[in-house]
Length: 445
Image: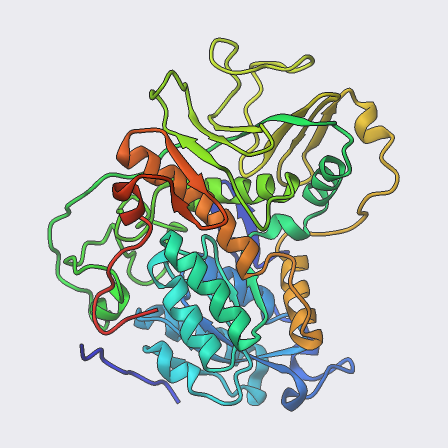
């Protein structure tokens, strides 16, 4: 493999939308230029960005506003994206900019003045890029899902532990107030024993084949694919230049697993967190239509049942007292149902309960937390303190595993028993083979 190597020596920059992030024009405070008592560039955390698509642009726009960081490198195999990202950093820092643009992530990682990297590539690159970064001594913020396979989740947490790196997963509910309040109440037993949890965004992917198209000028398609199997370029996989969508490639199984890993993983993380399962997971998964299950269904050792659907249908699901069946389950949120009532949580401040007293009487829980902003702040603070982040490689990896279990259940079309400690399916060789995938040379983890 001989990838080309090209070196060249933005209200809210990131607004959460139904499918992910929406990048807005860059706007940087004067503190980023060293004014207002901000740290000098030499005392800041040196940051690099790997992947400057829709999500990467949003993260870059936000982090350029932090006076304690200095963006020193941006990397993307799309020349327009990396050129625009470098221009944004240069505009933000003026004469104080030392940002370089790279085609190959290995060149960015070789810089000794970059302390940490933010990875917002496609799923196929998340673990390979994170492992390379951590072995190079960098701390990491990696977008969700952190892995493409179950095996990759394990490798990720093992490497993070072995090299002592600070790792943050882009599951920002962990630092968002409504989710912190909801999970705190569930963990403190306010609902009693949890019997059911519901989340939305069902659906995975099947094999696709798209016709070959000419590779756009300057796009390093070989490096875009990276460890994934070779496929010819098609514009549906990569939107050349300015991206229009968050994850345009997620319909292809070589690059993702559809809704379960692109969207539902946010909610799976909330479920794992609320059920106290950050070091474990479900013990069984059944795809819809198998053994009478109306929806993708997981079971936990506690007896809690997790189902994935858009609404609670009285003909298919347990509908608790006080619930209106016309209510859609909140995107990226969850409905926790227990002995004493239910809590429904979603983004942008959405938080409801039945009875209402569950929330009205809550006076001892979390009182602050903002989407993405607090997640970045938590990461940066942990880089300084070397403490565990809100959603580290272990927690984020196990939430990704929940999504991967759903995909494998769909593909095998049967109920699967899962051992969350050994991270293997019980007495099912075919399903176990799907825990990992071969990587294209020269990439390995």
